[in-house]
Image 1: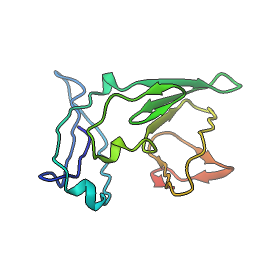
Image 2 (image 1 turned 45 degrees about the vertical axis):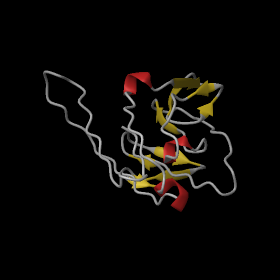
Image 3 (image 1 turned 60 degrees about the vertical axis):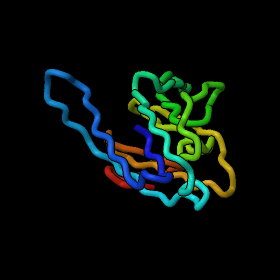
Image 4 (image 1 turned 135 degrees about the horizontal axis):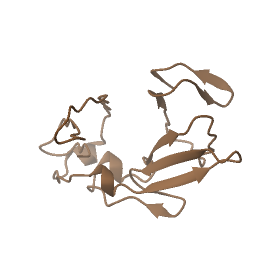
Length: 141
C-alpha cells in the first residue's frame, strides 16, 4: 500500500508477506513527510501496490554489472509506473525509484530539479560509493 496523507488517513504501515508457508523476515522502512495543506484536504483513495506489478528498468554498466530500478512513480527511461492515488506523495513524478545494484555496478541517474531533495539509504551489501565518497552501511545520505 502506498501511504496517502489525505482526509481520513494520517499514517500507514506495510508488512509484506513474501512466503505463505515459511517465515517472513523483513526490514521495515518508515518514511515520514509533511504533505501540502492542499493534499491534506483531499479525499483518501485506497490502493494496493503489489511488488509484482511495479515495473522494473534494468541497466547495465560498461562492465556488464546490472542495476535494477523499480519505478515507484513517474517514469524513467520511457517506463511508466502503475497509476498512483491522486493527491499523494507518490503521484509527484519526481518521487520515483528504488534502485538495487549488483556488486561493483555503476549507475548514473538523471538530474533532478533544483528544488528536489534526493536521498539514498544503504541497507544491503558491503560497500557503496556515491561521487567518490564511501557510504557507511545502514546510513542515509
